[in-house]
Image 1 (cartoon, rainbow, N blue to C red):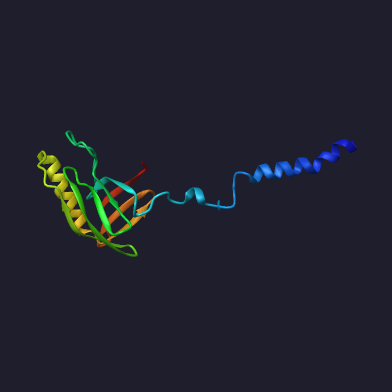
Image 2: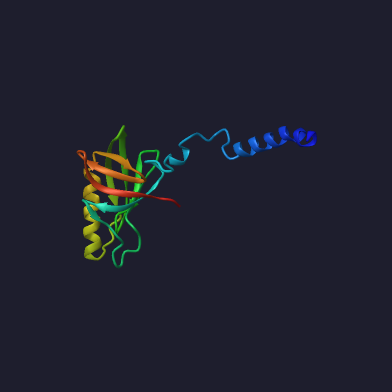
Length: 151
């Protein structure tokens, strides 16, 4: 019996160390729920525009997307052409500025999508997050919904 008791403290120490090994000093409760995206430097794929679902159209080679950089620039693809410009941010107030794009012609459905995307981006006054979605707002009302995409 003495032989078994002599190893008990060592066994308890090993069990305690094994239980703590996965947490590490940098982990905190709720870390798993923290978003793994941010407004900037995230690839945002358009999923909804003016309340209607957006999917890849026949003949469309790339999805509609935007990426905002830390230096106040926005780049993306609007369904037919690349888009670039700037943005200003103050809290949750967001405005896109000086939007410009390439000028390739595309089939009418893609040109209509592009016109709608550009009009909505130009009208944005704010944003909010819903889970991993970025909701662009015009005077508090949703105009576009983007999903974060991991590369």
